[in-house]
Length: 388
Image 1 (cartoon, helix red, strand yellow):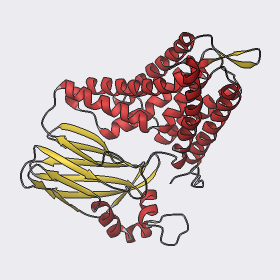
Image 2 (tube, rainbow, N blue to C red):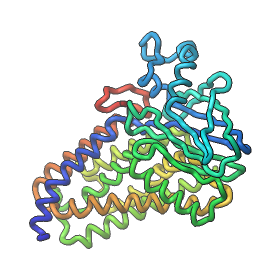
Image 3 (cartoon, rainbow, N blue to C red):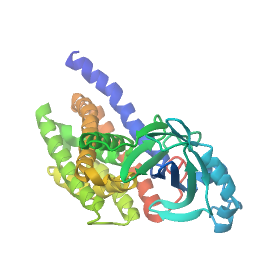
Image 4 (cartoon, helix red, strand yellow):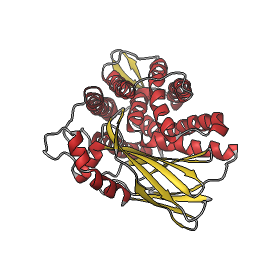
């Protein structure tokens, strides 16, 4: 393909790509998650399932008087409906038959960083001690395509984890001890998948990539001379971001450092706002890698929150951490491989310098401002920006 045709293709693809990236995350201030933990003792299963009350209210209606506030009486009145709704969308099977689960005791309320969750306690029994479990998960599949279930299985100290929902509603988990190499690959996949569904991390990275093909000179953006210069800038930026989030992710996952989830999520949203607005009014022009490093320290705590919910295998802790970090890096590089060539191909056009760069950056900043308002202030915004 000639350079001219590639530039034309890049112009045709880059704007829709930016619009897609801005519109997808605008539907949720934080990806909707639930947390399902299964503990096996022989053929017996004990489970805990944390489900966001805001998601349940949207799906089946929990706010009885419609005043926008959930009371304990309203939640308790819907306990039976909540359990029936959730269990109808979860199926656990062993290799020789179904492992039926039933609710045990009254539901509890647990505060997570993004709001109140109901806690379902479940018990069940398989026909015999299972060698593998198949988990079919369809919670909120009909109301929120972005919803994910973070699954953890503890079988005799061997921890297995998976992310369910969307295009992966069913997972078959081997319960036997895995080799260190298998643990590494499993957490590598988790890292790749998390960066691809972490829209705030993606928009932060895109905000750093958009000006990488330009240089600020004489008060205006100008295209860089060659791809090598842009590539070096991106390499420094992504490497700094990776090193920083690897440090805080590891420290947080090991329990050395901990920050309140709300602070972390709010700071991540703020980092997206700052990175995007810097493209419109360039304050940091040459050392974007330093800004990426500083903000990467914050994003690492966000990664650690997901990793903590997935659980870390005690027998291969270091490999799991390394695998997750490598997976995040590979996920980032895949995004770079898509965005950077397209941006470089059209860097010299007025469309890119005067429309795509400032317009895309402002759109990203607006979405991130909405996230920040919801995460820091508990504002409930309209569906365009707020929770679906």
